[in-house]
Image (cartoon, one colour):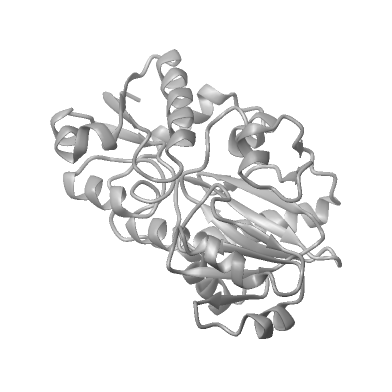
Length: 307
């Protein structure tokens, strides 16, 4: 396939800028190693007018968080007629919003952890009693565990809400599920091997994701084959319900009875040396550079997202 001049979008203005710069640099190097005429493009420095002027024939979106993963950039690229990687406008926006994606999954009959939407006027004590401790509190529209707090002591929910509200007006509280954290990469409709995440820290926070070397990633995940297949099928369903396409990653939790629940979707997953989709792809025999090329080949100009 002649891919023409390719832009790798990286950096951006979100709280995940530094992670995006690392992802973009890795993707850029991999595509160039495969002979692609790839060029870096940072929207924070060059603006959308520069994107149009650059003459890209397709782009690889390595942006994370707001402005890059939430439908805004996808909408701009669709209007410009430039094919781009990953999900379209609607699916990107829905996947970024952890509350509204949960509403969709619930309507479709998919299991999600018990949760509550928090506001400054919430009855925090009642929500603690309703969900039970521990509780995870998070901004609904951030990624990379930014703004997340684990509440373990009664009376701690209000302070956790205030921390999350620094990043987003919409804040969620979720019951902890203690059966383990897992993730399933999706590539062109196929579920990659399940990865089990075992952090050395209290939970899988920003430090565990990007700064530490003692987080364990188990692939094979160690689950019975039937349960792994069930989780892969659930990930594919969750991906389809939101209308995602191309590639992405679905995070799944198990409860103490080993029942799986959908946690969230990442439509522009990390591509750093700590990242999970490349790890799962490698377990399937797909090298990093080949993964980048496959994702790029799936680029499209948008249109209506259809499950």
